[in-house]
Amino acid sequence: MTATIGTPSAGPSVQSQTLSVAETGGRPRAPRRGVRSTAVRLILWVVLVGFALAFLYPFVWLLSASLKPRGEVFDNRLIPQTLVPGNYAEVWEQLPLLSWMGNSLLIALLAAGLVTVSSSIVAFGFAYFRFPFRNALFGLVLATMMLPGAVTLIPTYLIWNQLGFLGTSVPLWGANLFGSAFYIFLQRQFFLGLPRELFEAARVDGASYWRMFWQIAAPLSIPSFIIVFIFEFQASWNNLQAPLIYLNFGSVENFTVPLGISYAMTQFSPTNGGQGDYQLVMVAALLVTLPMLILFAFGQRYFIDGLATQGRKG
Image: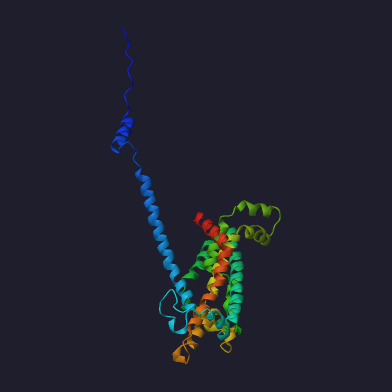
């Protein structure tokens, strides 16, 4: 008997590939998943560009208005019909902008530096120490964030009045000596992510609690420190309400940037006898944004790293 050896029949995968190639004229069909992924990325890119342009529009409008003459400031043209670059030189003659920026810079640095250190010390205590009613006390600290600012405005004013600091810049940064509930919460979450074994080993070696904080916790928490500093610097730099309440109105040079720009808007108003030189206000508003842009540019890497770390810790 002679055995017959036949060729193996093609499997279903080979048959389907042959059919697919035959239907497409000899060329393999492009995968639909790749086309769909490209379409999704394109739509996402368009949406992101749209949001970026929407957020960028006010800044472009401000830049355009700062280069216009007096009568064309509010014509809503992004490209000025008449360019007046001399506005950037005239603003220094009409407004004490340098004094305002110096006052705001000093207050913002004091406020940001003090609240960063004080909040970190309190947060380290909540993160490291184990003591009775610790969670209840921490919850009470967080509960202070629920109080509206209008509720604490009058008591805070009376305190600074009793201390004799009204008319000075001390109330604008002095309260930061006692920390901030939000920053305490932020720093505590960061400290909880540090290995506790580091601190236990330091205690065995005889390190004090202050040394543990300054030489172990603080160097490992630089990104969170920078986040707190940037947040508070920005909040203090743009604060209008507190300078409006506490600063002395005897001298315009003592104003901060937000209070000074508000003053300029009032002085330039035609209803107050002004000539409507709002283009100078636009120049001032544009110039005072530069410190925040520079601060974020230098701290961007630490800022993003700190937020990413906080996100991983939940």
